[in-house]
Length: 405
Ligand code: PLP
Image (cartoon, rainbow, N blue to C red; front, side):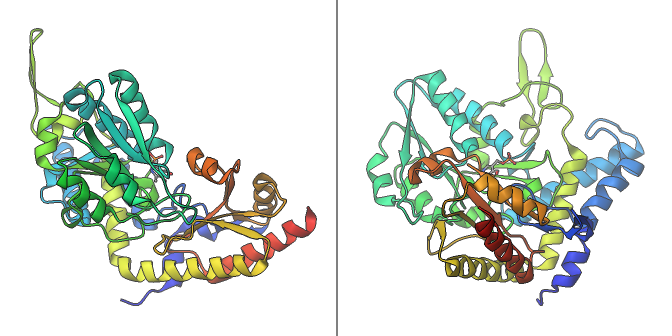
C-alpha cells in the first residue's frame, strides 16, 4: 500500500493551523495523538443522532448505539487478534486498565510475601498501581534493570522469577527509550514458571502490529487517545480464563446478574468489568480510529515512522552536542535527548515559540531519568503525519537554542 502523506495530513484538521504565526509542528505524539476527520465526525454524529444509553433501552436509539458499541469491540478484537470479543474490556485508558487489573488480580491471587516483577523502564502507570498493591498485601516489587543502551537485562529476569511471583508487568515499547521489548520471549520465559504476563501496549499499538495470541500474553492494555482515538478511552484485554477467575474492580449497574441485599452475582464477560455507563461514544470513536489506522496501512505507517526516527537520530547526532537516551536495536518512532549545558525546559520554551511542540521533563518515567542521573530531558515523538521537513525545522530550532543560551 502506498503511503500518501499529503492525504494523511489533510485528514487531521488540527495540523492545518499556525501557532505564533508558524505552521504547527506536533512532536508530542507519545503523550497523545491528533484525531483524523472520521473520528471527529463519528463522535459528532453519534452525539447528534444516536446518543442513548447502551444495553438498556429497547428503543431505536438504544439498539443502534448498542450495536455500534459491540461492533467496536469486534474491531478491537480483530486489531489485536484476540480470540474472543468478550476478552476486550473497554476502559478509560491504560492507567485505568492497569489499576483495575492490579485490584482484581491482587484480590484473588496476591498474598503476603508474594512478588510482582516490573522493569526499570516502566511508565509510572505500570509502577505505582503495583506498588500500591504490594503495600496493601505486604508483597514485594522486583525490578528488572536495563543497560545504558536501554535494553532490558533479561538474564536478570530469569533469576528473579520464583514460585512466589504472581505477575510480570512489562511495557511493549518504552515512552522514553523507544525500546521495543522482546515481549514474546518474556512471556514464554514466564509461562515456563506458570507466571502470567501483562503487556503495556500504550506506545506499541500506534506503531507496530500487535497479535496477543501470538505473543501469548495474559493481559494487554492500551489507550485510545494515543492511537488517534478520543480521550478517556482504552482497552484491557485478558485471556478468558484469567478474566473468569478474577473479581470485578468496580461495582455498579450493568456488571451484575442479580442483586439482593444479601448477595450479588456478576454478569458474564465482558460486562462484569464494565460497571456503570461506559464511554460508549468514545469506544466507538476509538474503533473508528483503528479502522483509519488499518486503512492507511500499519506497515506503510511503520516504514514512514522508522524513516522519521532514523533521520532525526542522525541529524541530532550530527550536531555533536546532543546526548540521546536509548540506543536499542529495535525502537519505535520517538527519541529523547538533552542538549549540552541547556535545561530541557528552556529548549522546550524556545521551540514552542517556533511552533514546535515537543515534550520536556520526566515523561512519567522518573526511574528512567534516575538511571541516567538526569532531572529530565526532551522528547520528540513522531506519528504518521509527521515529515522530514518538520524534523529539519526542529534541528534548526535546536541550533538557535544552542546559540541563545
Ligand atoms: N504506559 C505508557 C508506556 C505510556 O506511554 C503512557 C502514557 O504516556 C501510559 C502507560 C499511560 O497512558 P494513559 O495516560 O493514557 O492512561
